[in-house]
Length: 227
Ligand code: TIU
Image (cartoon, rainbow, N blue to C red; front, side, top):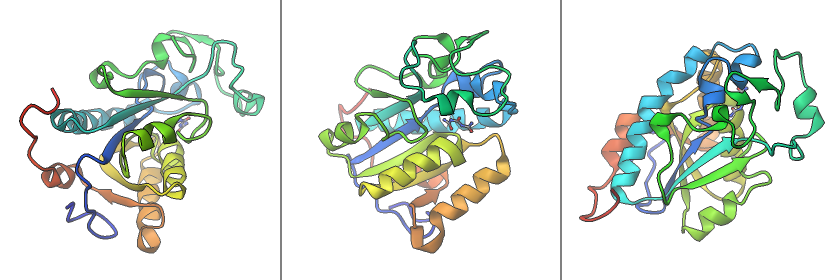
């Protein structure tokens, strides 16, 4: 049980809680990617890498399900609505060539997950054209197929793709726990506000908890589980 979760304790369903790592891609975290092209200070996001890595190691050691998502588009941008590509006045738009390849396009270096968090064989990788990870993806079917009932969430950014995905998951009947140090925003005040609104009203969207209390709540790895 995660005892100091907000708004109250979270009872982890051993083996049925998937770790969902949202969009920890070079395009959001490193300089010269999509996040920077939108005018953001990307330095705020690196802090989430180490805590997310700790969660990955814990889940892998137990052989529990891990899912990674990537916000990404087909090379012909057929899955990118013009409203998304044309919005605002960014330095570069989705699909434009940048120092890490075409922004948010599948197969380009910038679209890849940062090396420290790279998926390992057996972990699902969901390419998502939207902010929410359930929109136009097989994520729900993948989770149901794995017998998952809970999502433990890490990733970026807290108020955009993380919050959207948690709301989508909530409506589909998954209990969601956001790990506070494993998520980040370009705007620290938005991270704080997002966590507050997730846990308000008796957990209207879900739970949030510190990394240490999540790790402390995990059962010892079974002999032979994971890697
Ligand atoms: N801009 C921003 O904060 N986020 C995104 O565009 N995508 C994700 O959050 N993954």
